[in-house]
Image 1 (spheres, chains in turn red, brown):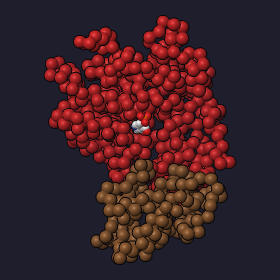
Image 2 (image 1 turned 90 degrees about the horizontal axis):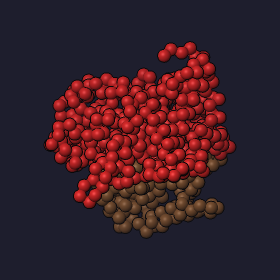
Image 3 (image 1 turned 120 degrees about the vertical axis):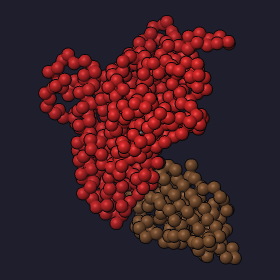
Image 4 (image 1 turned 45 degrees about the vertical axis):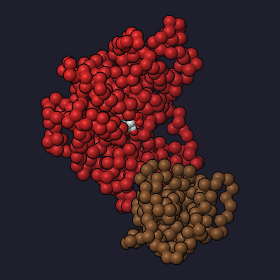
Length: 444
Length: 150
Ligand SMILES: Cc1ncc(COP(=O)(O)O)c(C=O)c1O
């Protein structure tokens, strides 16, 4: 699709996010902690409000009016996620509590006893067993490390780690060397939450598939910033953390290829995930219900649906009235293209200004990074930077960002991280840099 | 910079952060312990030499923010030459100062340590100030396990 677009002014979108008007200690809030969680547009807040006031009921189990409304909104959100990820079917979209739970689900189901037993009988059930290898990378979030460590320990598999370069990029040669017939699963982050690196997922998936390994892509940080096409990536599993995509907390997504989700054993048992139950034997529900035991986070999922609507609106707004017949998918692709460019602009400007300050070092210098600027200052610890910037109303994150092994690799105990969203401004990037400059003066 | 912040980052704290006193290890120290703050990755190791129930030397190593580094530095100065009981009394008063909310009361007995009074306005930073102290007490009590603020 080629579109002729002028660049609309992103700053008008700030009005859609009421929290951005917050004043912190007399200063206008500059929210630069979007990688931790994003702020929510009014559209999402309204959807939640409407749900609690006028639609609240349990889903998939009532014949009454409210239950039907809640169910239809809930099911509609699943189709919106299908569009967001370009999945082949909405049955491939499983709602979870968060990205962490999505990864735990896959790690558990691929190593549960039921999985191993089934493998003996029918060769098609995917499973990780004793002697197999699981590959992850140095830049993974603890959420994509610990579940695999636990899984490996459970079955006697080995966890191996793909190294990264000093610039913060996957060492593809080393990756090729680590892949073998023994590799059953590769767990890789799409966009690093600490470095901003965008990994070459399509190529990595292809390489993994060549040795017969499955690939789980941790899309927690890609979801808010990139247009994702799971079919094009050919990812076997793809996970999202919805509170980072302008939706409420408490909702995650697991995308899985249908054949895999059908072959794996269920995760948790309970209501909704069954077809029939007797004390002798239970048969399980079809996808996606099979993996969604118990009452889901109905409000959160409906909020997620509204967040995706908002992103599609953003795409239409960006294009203007010239393309009235755009599909939602097309609008989302446009939105993420624009969002990615805008965030890169903001992050590049912040990096440029920060690097003018002597003693600032930026972690992660891969080309085409996402809007994440992770940095250290020679004379001040990231926590001091965080506290002092906060007194200027600037919210950043300081710490190890749930990436302790990566911090070790970088040789730092922690970093300060500014992460941008499309609603941030150049002025906020400047305030960040002048705040850091002040800290430099104060501490040296 | 706001007034509050000046309260937190007093000159004495900035100075001890930049030039920590009693920094380094004591080879063959009578007592030593390690402390971590898993939330922010601060870690500190405290070494104590003793003679006749008094601490003849106290040193520390580690990496952390200005608050924890300065706290460790000022702590070593405060407890050096003191008995265990005297050190414990200083700790108690210090802890009370940084954790009690409401009107600030003077703590003249604490000497230089009083510069940490501003920390109580920053709940997430209190652990930075107390980590060296908890580690010091663990060393006195001969605890083998690393101390954690969590
Ligand atoms: C790369 C990455 N993976 C996984 C997660 C975990 O997401 P959640 O806490 O929503 O489960 C995060 C969130 O910080 C992340 O940045």
